[in-house]
Length: 314
Image 1 (tube, rainbow, N blue to C red):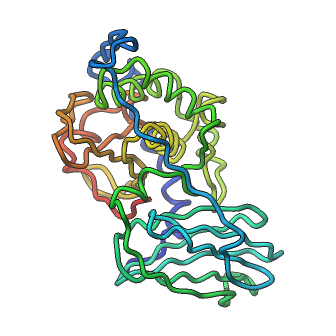
Image 2 (cartoon, rainbow, N blue to C red; image 1 turned 90 degrees about the horizontal axis):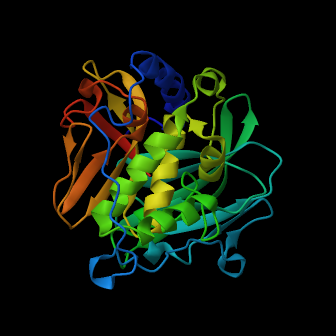
């Protein structure tokens, strides 16, 4: 069984600063400007056909639990579950499937969505309440038999780490980019180019980040800066909202494999594009690392992906 994700998040966020200090701030992408997409918004034969928006919501009427936590399993066939917790204590959520476990910090008083990213099968969901120091006791436990209609659903909907809706600023901006794109890959290129040019790495934030940090993609867009987690959350929100299955990945990167980091992977069946010295292949997941790209990292942090080790996916 893998170690809990939450214990590693603070380490990831702090080492992102060290990674950025090793980069030389050059033009976005380090390999030349991405050509601006042609204006084909008026030609349906050469425009990106955006799929229907896939939302994820908490249904109070379907939720079960107790006085402190309610868990909604009504949409597990759509790749997610939701909960709301009213406890005054610190709350953690653990999701188990087979030999894997994912641990989340729960924001009390807020409806939150969590992905079923480990595919079909039996999930055990445990809500844990802080008792003293770092000790937790079980507040509520349930199981879910998951048989998703679409294997990409967990990566096409909002969730805690990619929190957006149809009115979010990042979704509105993504829709603008999609409207002028010729196809899905042109749209992906547009998002890539936009984030590279408009979001800068926030060294001060990396130095002062607290455990349990959860990004807000609209805030990242508005402030024009963020850490690697913010880059990955914003990219996932923009791409998912316009029908591109996108993962937020936590893992290790670099020659020695000791830098904990966050990046994206997306999926498309169309032929790909080339940028920042990594190739996009047809009909498979492709790596997208906007933190390094936007800040001009040298190619050893991107390359062909051999320096990346995926650990967790959201």
